[in-house]
Length: 236
Ligand code: TYD
Figure 1: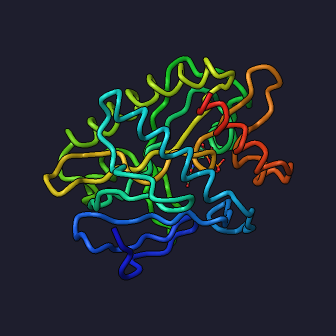
Figure 2: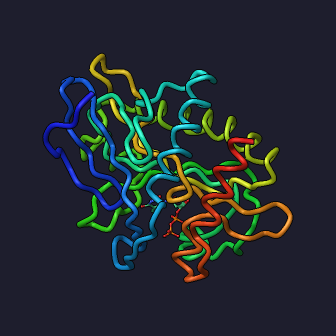
């Protein structure tokens, strides 16, 4: 499969058209951004790590009955996947309170939530990705029916039910993560984007250390070592 024209360049990936009109290639970049692009840096090798981690997690989810856009990992930085209509909703799943949840609601950092929280943000950089309720999403036409919002929530919980115990066995707490969904050419809702320490928070069970992009957000250093550690735990 060959790249043709650049479809879109995002903060962490370039998306390429290919010689097959139903397939795209995501090229994972080494760039790092946080706080809606206000903080920027780059870490050599980060793109390849995220491509490999995402590949393994998409395969795990596919094997467990979750439809995803993943087709193949082509090389270190490039993933082949289905072309979808992107649903402009970021689905945030939280098991433990941290980040914006603690800032917005004053819940103490590290509090284990009484149940898994699923939230929707409007994927719109200009507006700073505001929180959405179901009525907002329907008024904006981000999906066609309430049923589709219910399906996003259901799929997000199913994904959490697969990933949370999977990582716990590997000595990691899956604190929270962000999912994106799209509709494939037959109109099916499938998981798209990436699943990596850029959009998931992992805390080491033993030490409590962050093993994800919070190391960058909080200027802690050791980002690449942490991402390599996540990949090694997935592969072992
Ligand atoms: P959140 O606590 O809302 O964001 P922050 O503290 O960075 O402001 O993030 C919850 C989880 O979702 C976390 O694992 C990071 C991920 N996330 C993204 O990947 N992209 C985003 O735009 C947002 C808001 C969150």
